[in-house]
Length: 224
Image (cartoon, rainbow, N blue to C red):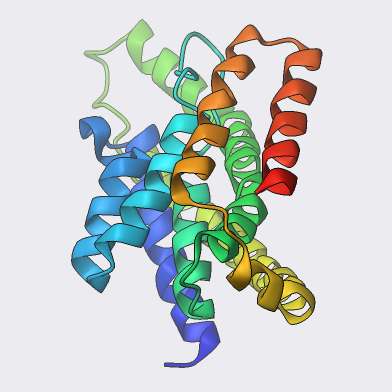
């Protein structure tokens, strides 16, 4: 399987699972731990899959969708990290750390994509309001639901594919200059989970807390 086909398949999976955030409600299926378990079943790499999933679960454990707040898109970040790690053949926690740090921005890219889609659906919202004004005068405009699903899938597919190809180039460059050091690093999964658990600081929603979080993460990386 070529690299492009591999990432196209991954992008299709990511776009489909992304629909569970807003279009198809199936409970916790889009959570990192659930994705890690599914990935472990598909690849047989249960230890690595669940370890990566636990890192992302801890890092954003406190952030929930309340009101108009769009939470980080953990689905895209988790899938990006797992797909990058397996295609790069990483085995040690030090290598996975680079992969996960590179994949973290995907959570915010996904949120921004969702925000754009919500803005684009203003016309569909107006159509629903018009129908509610006189529900017996016409049938419910089902077409807007199908169009919304297709638009969300295609938009997420294209955005994820472009981003994951860019991340692949970035990670390949980083590994070309530091992979030997990363393999020999004594950092463990326990240390990475401790770093992720500091994500509780992000619940304070203040800028200094973010500096403390990333500063602590960098310090632990240097120590180990």
